[in-house]
Image 1 (tube, rainbow, N blue to C red):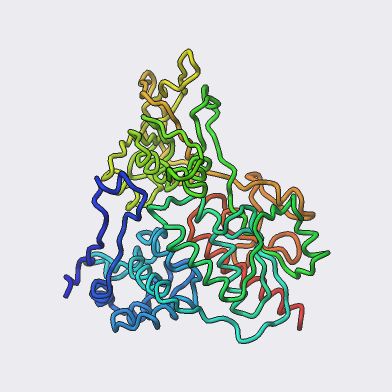
Image 2 (image 1 turned 90 degrees about the vertical axis):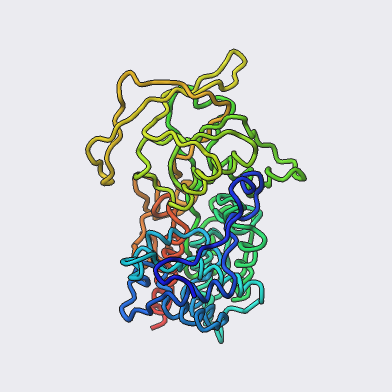
Amino acid sequence: MADMLKKVPVREQDPKVRATNFDEVCLGYNLEEAMDEAARCLNCKNAKCIQGCPVSIDIPAFIHEVKEGNIEEAYKVIGKSSALPAICGRVCPQESQCEGKCIRGIKGEPVSIGKLERFVADYALENDIKPVGAEKQNGHKVAVIGSGPSGLTCAGDLAKKGYDVTVFEALHELGGVLVYGIPEFRLPKQKVVAKEIEKVKELGVKFETNVVIGKSTTIDQLMEEEGFEAVFIGSGAGLPMFMGIPGENSNGVFSANEYLTRSNLMKAFDDSYDTPIIAGKKVAVVGGGNVAMDAARTALRLGADVHIIYRRSEAELPARVEEVHHAKEEGVVFNLLTNPKKINVDEKGNISSVTVIKMELGEPDASGRRRPVEIPGSEYDIQVDTVIMALGTSPNPLISSTTKGLETNRRKCIVADEENGQTSKEGVFAGGDAVTGAATVILAMGAGKAGAKGIDEYLSGRES
């Protein structure tokens, strides 16, 4: 029996080994380990962990089934709330959500809710346990734009209610940010993402790839010419941001989006693919979020010495604690309280270094975090040949600019009701990064869930 105050340790690849490959870092629990960890759950009547979950999974109920060894039943409990549990179990920031609310964590370590969810979901994938769909169709036709986490969640929830759902994806492969943004070593594409999407297909959802809404067709055409009664926009935020510093247009400067897309979706890390990528021998990654960690750890695996450059301290790093820990274990160097001023190139036009300046934390800014302030005269150079900008992303304005009556804010994000996803255009709903700007997978899923509820209420209301 496990120590009730401490988590059952999860097996991982050795840092020195995993830094040289793209295999999954975390190996997950086996049945005995999962049952031991589940036994630590206090089965609280007023379960605060559920309140911390953006899709409101009945966490004590599924963990109870794991404790009893009823893994298929545990999957059914999770499946009522989440369409993508194998993904969430791997990439959700549980430490600040469900596990952050866990009562067990007051006098010890919280229950490893995420690792248990992953175990259950992987069991379901390996044993081909089918999701529970609708008994009959309701005759309503809904379009979902984007096959990322918000779109898949919305589509899955609507299909369970009997809607005829078609998902339109701009790329040639389904999954959105799950396939182009998150590296293989954190989220395996064939073993996990493709199989999770198959579960959504088994609910009756149809998918069309290579359809760019705003070019191939428009939302207005979908509704006026193709008979879709409602549309959910879950197109994400794929437009990268830059700093505007000297040298930023040099060869060898990437957005993290491009760098990760080349590696993840286009398989540049695999020698059997022809996709070009500048691996670099010394790489600087600017930023401190999960995308920055993903880019840094990818560059490391491609053979580079990697520096993270972040203008605040470690306490303010927005990346998951686990991702920062893994990056450090693998050898990524953190230059904290440091900000780039200029990217320097040699006479051949190649990047030679990045000039940075030291920072100190001043008064809190609008976000509540202490504002970084430059320390005059503290500039110095870091020798690098490649720079990756991981500063966040904003939505592509193509959809909003080609849809009549769709309101956006100053950041080009679609304005939508947080509770039900309703936009300024009747019958059109939106959620995820297209509304909030870049955020987490689970928050996008929560928005997809809200959008499905809003669409169901909207179309049900039209009947009555």
